[in-house]
Image 1 (cartoon, rainbow, N blue to C red):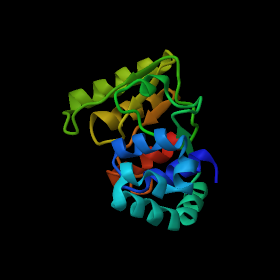
Image 2: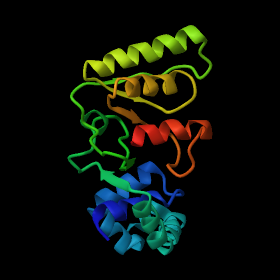
Image 3: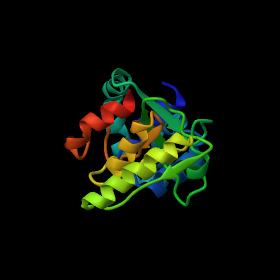
Length: 188
């Protein structure tokens, strides 16, 4: 198991909060060290946290095999592929799960997000603006949600440009399911 895989196992222990995970990682020095002896960080994780990590470890191989089969890249904060702009936020994610090309540091990225219930005018113009930006070389970043987000992705695809979908949930449980075709086009 490498460091990014160890981090995937660690973040799968959902009962461990972001703050606990951050403090335990700093104390242990790495996710690999933390997984090797979670009990050493019991003062930070608590008994429930240690138990959650042990449960995650018992499911680790199945989870990691599933990620590999699905073509998921694991990007830690220490990776060159980790987006610089995200690295300096208040609570940068410990790990990004990425399908497709894991190039996340485009020189020119434009985030387009908005309502899920836009009218026809808003949807048409969102798609046009995203297309024009993508034609100029911008990478369009949005959330793969219904409405404005989906139109932003479609606009980038219309221009054969790059687009990145940032999901709030799991890669294997796409929400909304209606956007599966869009996700597949993005991955192409």
